[in-house]
Image 1 (cartoon, one colour):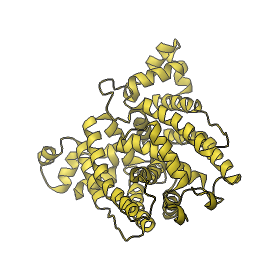
Image 2 (image 1 turned 180 degrees about the vertical axis):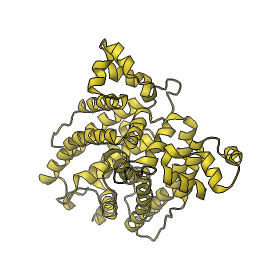
Image 3 (image 1 turned 30 degrees about the vertical axis):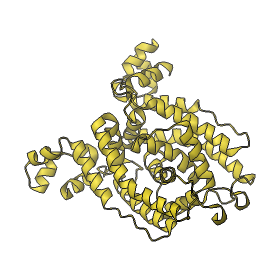
Image 4 (image 1 turned 45 degrees about the vertical axis):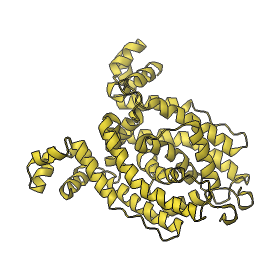
Length: 189
Length: 189
């Protein structure tokens, strides 16, 4: 996994090769193929592992906890920008994530795998939001999925579509905006 | 453009070929290549044209206007799901958009083109939000980009990452959530 992650971040999706991961890890490539039948499968496993490394902490301060969590996600996403593209380090390339998204669209089994990874990972954040709702820190009719879509969606939208930067200040602003809404005080429902 | 759009939606990105567009349109393929040097360029032009067809209306009711606009975008996105994949119509494939995102990540010039298309299109929605802010319907410190990221981002996140459906009820819920926020009434701010 460590060898695969390093190789993937160095070479990007296009340059990612199971043979080279096997060589780097000092194992037979058949060993890898037995567990991950294609390079797509291995790449998704790497991403899954990277995501499992992101902690979700519940301190009772939802905004702070969401901000900390999304900052970790943003760090990971920014690391994938232009992976394998040493020629274009300052390009706003979506790199690795874009290739995974395309692989997921092309191959139904990869798509199912990617969605499973995200569903498992997102369950922790959704639970964090739902606990805040249950203790009355959010409106009772808050749908955690919708709120989380607004947050994670904004990060991926910037990464994959508009190419705008995702820095700490942006994440803080985003969380505040999503939780508080945009209505003037007197009109807030 | 019409021939290219039909061909793209029928065959998807992988099956999209400039030669076939030329044949369908009854023009020489050199005519097309003169204006769009690769199939990626032609595909981006098609998407750009499809997006120009989506109207932004300002009736003075921001929530209704944003909902109407995002519903049009959702319709377009749902049409691209599984484009060119008649074998998997019910698959949650992101299809066309995923391929464009990957092409944009792979080729810097395509990336710049895609970002231009979105910047031009999004400018209308950002202006709609900013007019609401200026007339006091939104808080004075509202950043239209952050609010729009939450809305458009959520749609693309569902299309490309989680594969969840994007229907009319979801769009209404999303706009309400982003504009009103999630805090209980008395605690808003």
